Length: 175
Image (cartoon, rainbow, N blue to C red):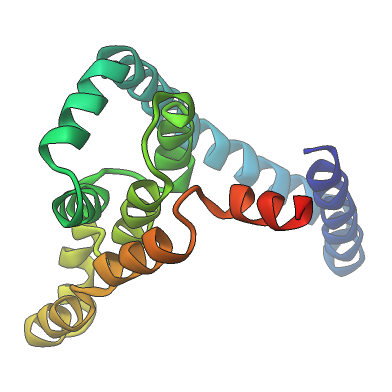
């Protein structure tokens, strides 16, 4: 995290210097004002999202997840996790912390992977925007063509990385 913050500080410094060079103090002040307005608009959404994430993590217990995984094991779990990813609202700042909360609850990595790929691939909340920018037929065709992708990726991960990426490489290093 420290490296990311340091790199972002360098980028901020660079952008501020270029902005100052292009328009002086008034342009820098206008940019900072717009950044503050954007942060204020996004802060309510982010705070609300984290409250929802926290409540969901508390409501969904390890036992509930185990029961769900037992009921929908195998390929069914890949289909359901892919579709759940597509239906999950919000961007990565919402669903990655949501998934991180389930790290110790025994969800197999391939299910989490299918969820993330389903979110990135389907994201059904994006469909109206796609339809408005292209055509309904093209948007639906894209969704039909990419429909099996999260499921196939989940199968690949389950086959080659049954314990997750990190565990596979740790085991190879110990040999």
